[in-house]
Length: 153
Image (cartoon, rainbow, N blue to C red; front, side, top):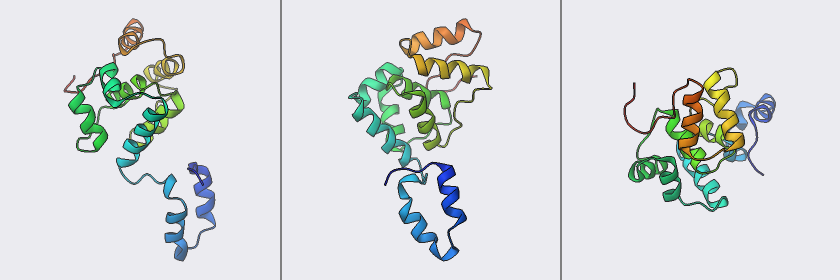
């Protein structure tokens, strides 16, 4: 049946009786964001489609391999959106796929009214090179580079 967008789910909920809630959950399981597993399942499927290994992604993202595997297994969780953006960019995700991955990781999507996010949106659309290239573009525009794992001020 496939994943439904929020607007469609809201429409269905408008016609759903309280006694039918279990049926609603069952019918729309693919569309629910229940936990961080949703991110891991989604991102791993995209990597398979794009024929890139997790190891390659972590190398291209400049993220320690062990840390990356722990993020995707759910063993660790990051609050740094930049780490997820690095993984998405290195995995060759489109802007749309990245927005969805952020949502599934329960992080804010890139927002066109925030200058750094707007530039990142362009970078995801154009994929001009490596993470190093992305960071150079960000810095050249007076913006913070994509952070890696660890503490940053």
